[in-house]
Image 1 (cartoon, rainbow, N blue to C red):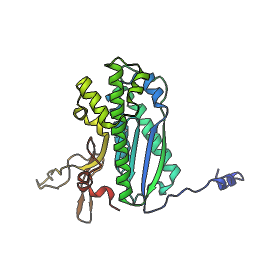
Image 2 (image 1 turned 180 degrees about the vertical axis):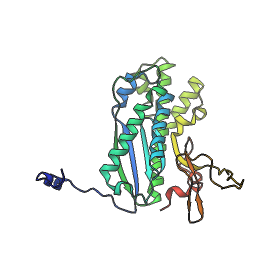
Image 3 (image 1 turned 135 degrees about the vertical axis):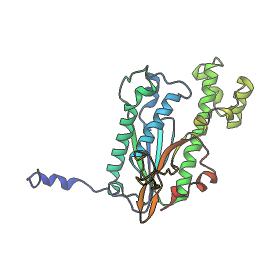
Image 4 (image 1 turned 90 degrees about the horizontal axis):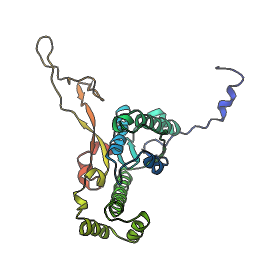
Length: 277
C-alpha cells in the first residue's frame, strides 16, 4: 500500500543501472544439464532435438526483444547481444537478466513436447544468466570468436570420445585416457583413420553452433481500393512490422538461424548494423 508506514523497506533496494553507451552481452547456461541430458536420454554427442529446442527458445527471445541484434548458441548455452543504444528496462541489470532468463526458460519448457513428443519432462530444467558490458565492437567480435572456437574444441573432443565408446568398444575411462594430451589433428586422425569419419563433413550445426540474426524481408505491394500500390508489406503480423517514419519505410525483419563462420570478417562485413551504435 502506497504511503504506508511499511514503505520504508524499499530504501534497502539498491539501484543497479548499467553503464550507458556499452554493449550488453547476456549469456545463459543450462544448470546441471549433464544430469538433465542423461535423465532425458539425449543422443550423444549431439542431440538434434535438444539443439533445435534451444534455437527455438532463443528465437522467441529475439522476437520479443528487438534490442537483441545477435545470438549464438551451442550445447546448453546461448549468448545474446543487445545493441549499444538499448534502453531496455532503463538498463537495470537485475531486471534484464531475470526477465530474459525467465522467458528463455519458460519457452524451453513450453516447446519441449514439440521436440520430445515421446519423452515427458521428468523435472523442470533451469538456466542461469549473467550480463557483461563491453565497450566496443572489437571485444564483441572477440567474444563471439571465443564462443565459436569453444564450440569447435568441445564438439571435436565429444565427437571423438563418443565414437571411441559407441563404435570403438572403449569404456568412458579408456576413451578419456586415449584422448588425454591429444591435439586437434590427432582427433581428426583417430576419426578418419580408424572410423572413416571426415569431421569437416559433419553437420555444420554441430561444428559451428547456431547463430541467430535479423534479416530483412522483401517488400510486397498491396493494392488500395483504387488499385494503387501502397508499398506496405502484406503480412502485418510478422515479428517486426514495417513502420513509416518521416517518409521512409523501416524494413521488416525476421529472425533466422544460421550455422556459419562468425570469426572471419565476411559475417560482420555483411551485417554492419550488428555493431552500430
